[in-house]
Length: 453
Ligand code: ADP
Image (cartoon, rainbow, N blue to C red):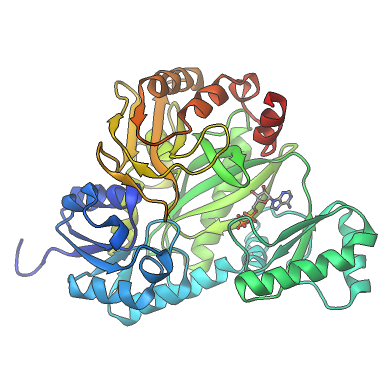
């Protein structure tokens, strides 16, 4: 440490595996790293790996990980220069981004204005259309009040259509409409839900795609006007809009088309002044990409991109927030091989009921091409207060088949006792001929489940 360049401190406004992931990236960059934790997480082993940690409130997230004044105060007390919000919690909250800036710290992510703009799906869609990013057919504006005008828009798009809350998220505030006679009531209900859940009654309409895949593009941008895209991911294996398995690259999609869409995403980042890591989510159907939303944070599934590009996205994210220039150009980005991530949840593999409790024994897999991101150790507690994801088993192979084979071996090695896990579900899914063939739709899991029953 020199006097001219004191070591900066990163405060982690999050918990669990992503907190540990951020600790590791901060260490690699030689930074001091500190955490805020809730009473439920007191004594969690990953906190020992931080330089310091402080309690930010009770177990209920609303009183701790979502409590902006408590988080800001803790970050200041621990001498933070930078704040990493991780994913979930406050990671896409523009008021939080503003509070961090007002407290004289730097949020690791885009500024509050950009976050707010991308958080409004209608505004985001308008920005994407302007940047030439392909979107789902439908107007880039909120629906008018007049039911006849709404009907005309639906006729124009063609049924089925989907109504969505402009301020929506987390798979809520959406409704599919298949016939004109259902439109008026559906619009009313969706607007009411939008107002209740998101405090914004604005809704919009787009074409409902019947059997899309979920394909997304990872981008990273610096504060000097440079933005690049780091390949794509396929996250079509989902249960109730919750991703279960992700992979990179997306199987059997024309690489030239992906490159074209990737370039557009990077260009739109330059246009909106985006800084940091971000993800453009698309539905992909019949050879076409349709933008649905942008996530302005690190995503759970970022490791599959790290394995095929060889980059440390979280370290890059921190560097971008510190004002560094992108250390690589688009030409230098190559993706090699294939990576697959299985989200291991503490839940019953058949009923999906959460299974909190104490982990009595734990053995994580290893060997060539196997990476496990987890904050769990034997003796640690899986809290009922938070997300049930306890580990990510990520495998790499020169080919997709090799990555799949390694995932199966890794899952077979995995041993968790004391709580139930969905590892057996993953083993079954990785054996499913549809998944093995590649290119399943977002409805595949529910169809697989109904056949199994
Ligand atoms: P959220 O922010 O709530 O996650 P998204 O806009 O990302 O909302 O949509 C969530 C999911 O809803 C998508 O992953 C997809 O499964 C489905 N969905 C959204 N828009 C459409 C559409 N136009 N057609 C078909 N399915 C859609």
